Length: 516
Image 1 (cartoon, rainbow, N blue to C red):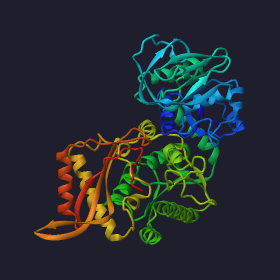
Image 2: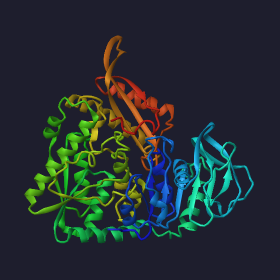
Image 3: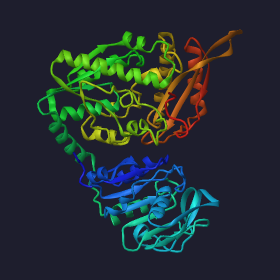
């Protein structure tokens, strides 16, 4: 079911910034989604897109194994925008040539615009101060028939092109990144000026269309919802409840991987402050047994995912004739769990890559096309209190992926105590709402220390805090040294078995936010 009257479809060629294109377009209140470059023409037609974007990518279009979308994309009569690799692919497939060059462009470059209509409408021509971000070692050598150059840079004589009679546009730079100062203008011109989209994709319209879709899918059947107490599952429960009311039963599973007091706090909140019907299941022993001696993070995530499904199916059988399971899968979960050209996915999210091939319950995933900040906006639109909406994200597999190596009760106790201290001090200092996420990780190593004039050989805790908007990219938080010192001092003094604390200053990419 197509819930969106207008849609921009991005064909992904493996760029690390593909998701940023979708984010920038959604910020214009136009719906946009990402699909693999290999998506068939039949499927693209069925999506009924208003426009198509060909993303960047790490390959060269002339490589023997280069990813190519079907050239019939250009026969659909739709506007097409090629970005970096996507631009070079467009040029090659339409009769031009692309070559490798010694004068590569990586980073900031000056763009000289020669034609101020189309993508560059409203921008002043001939001004070299238009800063853009380049990331390529190839350039366009021969322009295809029907195309004209609309901008150049120091090392790219054809930094932007357009077709003179068809709505085809190509840019060598990345308009989606913040370093391209005219990027928002370029994407806005494509979406509104060329594709003629309307800015009507809001959370209010999303609620209306999604509620109708859930009602049509469910009918009079019963639904259970996986409720963890986090933002995603809370918003999912509220949205499904709005659609079907008492046909919904929420199930909270204590998997033994939660933080101190978390289970009690979550159950109290939903039973006292919501109209949701909530069942609690104690599955601590079951999950710890499933994770016994499991070291591989992918296997951890898969076993946790399969364990949840097993319990949900058992609880559904007790309720009688339950047909559907609702869960809070987000768009980043889907993107990171999909492989590119056979390569391993970034990581299997427990609610995507951990699901069994044959499941007794049909899935309802109303947030599957949303980013985290959109989910928060949706929660507020649904009337959920800020205390539920602005909690820092907590992973579905819980502390199981914040313990590097074996998950044991002893190690869980160590990371739980450290986690309490991190959150207490972040809230006390008002940094909790300033950052996207902050937490403690127990490392699989021990180091020598000195306590009370005696030698120790104990565990290491890593502090992780990041700034982000949608969890697809993130930068490490510039937390004051004094605050880091307080957190470190408290963990070493108060958590038995820890004698060293380190601070993770990795960004995403290349690292991920969670360590596993």
